[in-house]
Length: 398
View (spheres, rainbow, N blue to C red):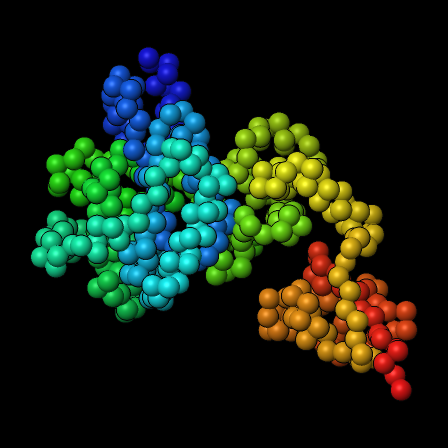
């Protein structure tokens, strides 16, 4: 029994930052195994964006491993809390989403989460289930379980007040609203990123107030984004989405700073980091990209993306099947064309790319958005991974 409990503890706590507390976790596991009752492992996501990125999967991969040793995951969709906005790590007010935006995001979140989680051991729960029927008196009673002084122990709250930044009452009560989810499902363990530690501890305290065994709080490291500075975030544009094309996923991972890829290996793969470090950094990064693309697509797709990447970047060859744009005008506005071909997300991004010398022809960066198409056509390189062939339709001339 002890050996089995030790193995469960290893799986549950591997790579974690905080575990509050290990003794309680051991006791819960002893009870679980004796009674043959799976632990209730909680994770919450507010559907504030449509897509899951690799940063989210640090938690999801951990939860899948816990499911594989026999425990159940309660995946809380914060459709109610998303209307408040999680203030964690925020120095400004967070924009409030509409009900329609939240519902749309929640649908894609759950679909994408099952790329990793085991459906049979996952219970999807929307926290509006209990809040939509809660009376105002019950909500006020919930708030009585925490003091203002205790809430101000939270750094981002105290800093915003100190700097005369606005802090809404909604944001102030957010930890209580999220924490009450733990009471409603009687969670045994709750996982979150390190920025969620305060919220998770509030849930633990509320369970004690409601005469429940407090949940074990476990935090996982935040995945640094592609910029090598900030945590991965869609709003910062430094993310890799798990539904992106295999080509974009592979290319983005290859753009990682070398020193960052070891965290990616540790948190996003099951490969032995010390063994991988024996390789040249470039070979290691190729292995990382191949492993991640292989997981979300297939090994065949990953291998093809690796071959294509090496052909383009190592051997300086033009990739196959690049998109073509045929113009009836000899002179074109490159920004307009790239936007029309969906090679840039916005015209502002295109103008910024041009200013940064990120659009080139024959390895020469373009300085003007106006481009005169040569008779033989032209292949433009956009950024590091995208190409476009421009052709002039001379048959259109009178």
